[in-house]
Length: 190
Image (cartoon, rainbow, N blue to C red; front, side, top):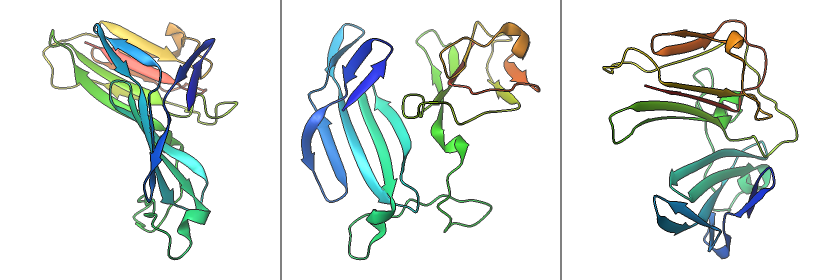
């Protein structure tokens, strides 16, 4: 498994083993986190759904990735795959996907007590062109002692920074009521 960022190529792991519904990839490219070398690894969970797609990619620990892949053939009777279920309009049996399923929102606090809220796209490198667009967005950090943001990073899907004229800042909130385009990454920090 590989990941490409421009000219950089990272091996997320080499096939190690498969259990009934998962594959494990280990011994990937080494990444250095705070002076500690960590070997990348990836776990892929296979699930039943009417749509064939990667529905989730996460990095639960530094350089350790997990992904969920769904496919209709995993729904055949007698196969060991769980059903990928999402609640859509109150219907728990619906397995339709939403563009919002392809984003991960995380809130972290660093050693200095600063808060960081990040929204990341999981489909950036999976499809040749962006398929998720927003007409407006807002992200806000609440219940912290800070009164202003120290960092705002917003990027289009082609890794180009969003212009300051495309959003507004109000204390700890970044928003836009007239945004028209794909977002790959949005981060605010106190």
